[in-house]
Amino acid sequence: MIKTENLSVNLPGFGLHDINLSIEEGEFFVLMGPTGAGKTVLLEAMAGLIPVKSGRMIIGGKDIAKLPPEKRGISIVYQDYALFPHLTVMENIKYGLHFHRVDKSEEDKRLNRLLHELDLAHLEKRLPENLSGGELQRVALARALMVNPGILLLDEPLSALDPRFREEIRSGLKRLHQSSRVTFLMVTHDFADALSLAGRAAVMNNGRIEQTGSMEDIFQRPDSKFVADFVGMKNLLPAKFDGTKAIIDDLEIELGRTPVNSHGYIAIRPEDIVLSKDAFASSMRNSFRGTVSGIFDRGFYYEVHVRTGETTFKSLITKKSLFELEIQEGIEAFISFKSTAIHNF
Image (cartoon, rainbow, N blue to C red; front, side, top):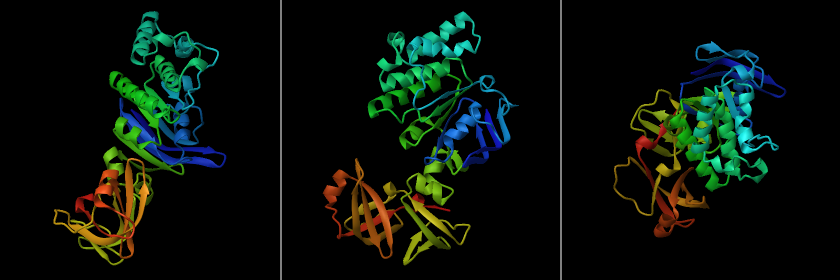
């Protein structure tokens, strides 16, 4: 298990402040947050590449904060691979063994397993300059795992890859995690990577942990305005609470529960807001008439803004639905959403 207690790091112009994390042995955990939040700094502090100002870093019951990198049982893989350009694939993979004594039979066993699982056997004599992005990333993973670390730190391992290689490496990471007892801690900006690989995550901002929890908690039940905005809660509205209702300007929204506070925010994911041209009877307790004020192409979906009174709601619909409903700016439309789709804090 990895546990940090009030971990702080001081760098010129930036720092980590009172980082408290608990990651179970064998878990796949993700760090998310905007650029400059401190995610890579935290990884490098764990790996021993950046000194810790204060706090504890406990692995397997032992505080490792003062240990040198090679004594921590941690490997790190960067997004730019950091392979040695003058060494072959095989030499790169085995490089870490210069610092870790391994029995020859165990070395061969590990090597054969990694070559097979990462599909590298046919590349072992090539130099890095002759490899694709996906191949480079697989070699970097094999090199990190060759020393049999207890913990593997991954700094945006998929960000530099095109979509085809990205899916390939994502599947490879999932297989490696399932077939090993290694704890994975990965930094990513990509929600698809986080949702497909991790069970739990932490969101960082300005060198602090904003929220830690399951993927469902973070995406459906954010603790703060920052986290709600970061994970795409596009409908983030200040509200006053009166009994089971949220009052937003001239709207009364039924929550189906009584909030603890008298005011705060409500948050609704755009995919949970149903858009229609006509009012219809349904189990949804909230339905409002409005005017379409904006339509934005988001690739596979369209984001449709509907203004109701002083409030604008944002809904995601498919291209097919947009054409079938004949949605255009300026027309009247109805939005509906369930009380269970509303998160308040």
